[in-house]
Amino acid sequence: MTIRDVALSMLVLLAAGCASAPVRPPDLADLGVADAARLIRAKMLTSAELTDFYLKRADANRDLNAFITLDRVGALAAAQRADADLAAGRTKGPLHGVPLVVKDNIHVAGMPNTAGTPGLRDFRPTANAPTVQKLLDAGAVILGKTNMHELAFGISGYNEGFFAAQPIGVRNPYDRTRIAGGSSSGTGAAIGGRLAPGGLGSDTGGSVRIPAALTGGAGLRPTLGRYSQDGVTPIAHSRDTVGPMARTVADVALLDSVITGAAAPAPASLGGVKLGVYRGYYWTDLDADTNTVMDLALTKLRQAGATIVEVQMPDLLKLNNAASFPVALYEAYDDLKAYLAKYQTGKTVEQLAATIASKDVKGTYDGLVIPRKLPAPSGPPVDAAPIYQAALKDARPALAQLYADTFAKNGIDALLAPTTPAVAVEQGPAASSPETFLKFIRNTDPGSNAGIPGLTIPAGLGPATGLPVGLSLDGPRGSDARLLALGMAIEKLLGPVAAPKR
Image (tube, rainbow, N blue to C red; front, side, top):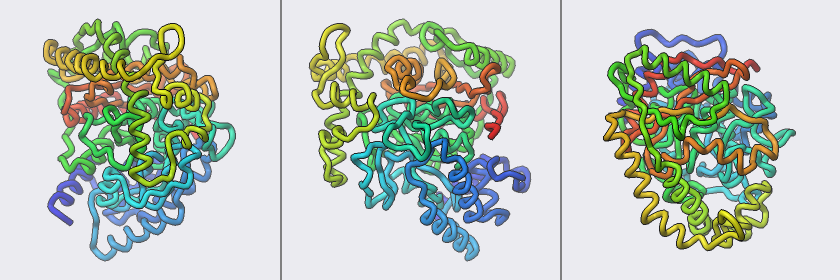
């Protein structure tokens, strides 16, 4: 082990609370990432036993449609190697033997990387994405590749091309009639359903934070550029990023530290923290459960010594509209074309689009991405190129400046909001409607376009539906460690979210 590995291994102990000896819970489903690492290192649990446990849970919960590829043979073999290494006194790092999952648009060498679309069903990368390699170098075991909204173009996970069991669509472990969010739907469902303690998703406009929030977990969209984009099926290079997901912010911080090599932060003190709230955008049209949970969270934060600052960002909606879809829809063609060629998939964008299975994604590619068009307020779609150039030149810099000014002028550590304005809706074709899509990305999309970090924290279960509600923090560019420190303090204040009943 290197000095860095030793330091990261110590963080495992800190993240799980090293004041007491590790205790094996009666149910292994209760384990988090750091918990599992501690027990494996203490030889109170083998990696093979834990891996087999999760594989059996995945088989017993096929109706979640969480996986596209479940690597039973490969995962067990990797777990057995981890156990043999540990028995011989060798450990790879702070995730030694810990089973994790990876969204199926992030390369894992030798496994299919479908990006949730039939045209890539047979594509098997020969190398790991750098983010995956960091996890493997730290000792992680990859259970498999998780399901997703097709080509990451949506938030419902209603993927008509990939489902292990009827009915269609990735399902929420808290209510299997509902969505698990997206586009990192399967990673959210696997973690929320206790089929894995953590894993990776990708986020263009909310695709890590939305499924984490709707399934009772935590997820980080890092500052754009903090993680490598290599080995990831793209939407838009100027927006995409991989992001870690887990049940707790502490485990997300551990995964982030492994990927970046930076020390994981300690939980912050909430006394004296200033958190901004912009009710004119982020807090409009909340459903009853989200409103109730968020009001209670604000009360607890004030009682803990945090100051809630009401801020104004009147240009937010206008600037985000000018920067959002013009960038994503225009870059989607060129970036996917370059990706397909770079990794020798043998496919063109047009060939891939011809086999898209999900009607919403098919319409987007055929009507907008391939012809390089954007929707118009009225009339037929218009040429995307000049609108894209204006977004890069004017709208996006102005949006980033709006956030920077808001943080600086109000002296706030972060903006606080509901991650989504509502709990998970029913799964089905309607969950992929434009109206539902726009509703669920509303609070996560602007920060994504500004390139700043965003974190979702489990805030509680709605009193009427029993469904998870997420609390989000958006921070200044590069403030990832501070957001994670605040998130760990807030999750401790709010308390753990109960597991799904099944």
